[in-house]
Length: 400
Image (cartoon, rainbow, N blue to C red; front, top):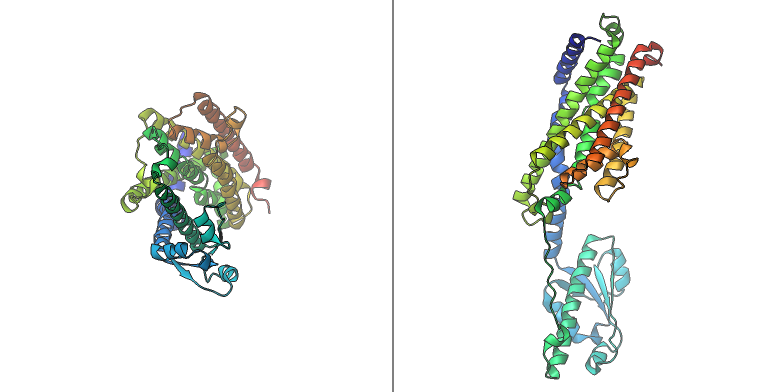
């Protein structure tokens, strides 16, 4: 293997990649634009839906409303709900004609007046409908307010202070370390995006330089040229790694753009409102180093995998399987407190996601970083060695 041959292969493949519109779209447009959509989209939709439903008047049916005239008047005067009468309230709830049903027991007002054993009211709602959930929240809030009013009236009749039912107040103060709080929020999303794009960011290029060349019939002529086949393997691998790193960097830029837009357009959002920290230079360098290694490892793995495939369509099928295989450990790490024993840190993708999450939280664990770098480097070397073996075996390379 000669460095000059490797550089020539890398330059040639990279030039072909730049000329390919599909690859450029996958490398530039998708990570830069799709990431803000995935980050901002759910928050925007949820906030707009919540605001819309809070402004609407949900319909609520009250069964035995005549037993609680004051409560019924309290609900109607609140302006939050619309109290309606329907023949069959529970059937109307199932059909969506009303959003909640309040069941008032017999003798409700009399039992309150006598101060007997507290009567029980029942709230019924459809958890599968967002409007019904909103109606339930509003109705529960109004019932708590009415209950407090009844308690205050009872105390006042006895000449007692309402403060008797609240002997002390509780105030919670959160001691926030800005990086930990912001990092916690970021650690639920950023590792997933980074690892996912490290896995699929260069997939289009990897498919094109392997299965694509087989279908175009250009791989046979390439193999009869003077450079060693290991030079072709390393050159193509460097091309895939370059594209993968570019896509990952653009994904990170898209994530930063989405956070900036979120702070501007969703200032009331807890997620976007509490983000704002910068990684220390040393931690940032560690994060970039880990991302470079995982990108290189995934590039070598995808190159070897697609080199084994028979055609372009089969390679695309494996690409979809690979993206799902990467997402499972990334999701698990992002939303749980994952095991961090030494054997666990040898699991590919899983270990990188754990380390990225720890670095974002400001927790530098050198044993985890060392195990991740060594194991990922070993997987990289093994993948490239297997790729060279496949490239040298034409019976496997051109299998039908």
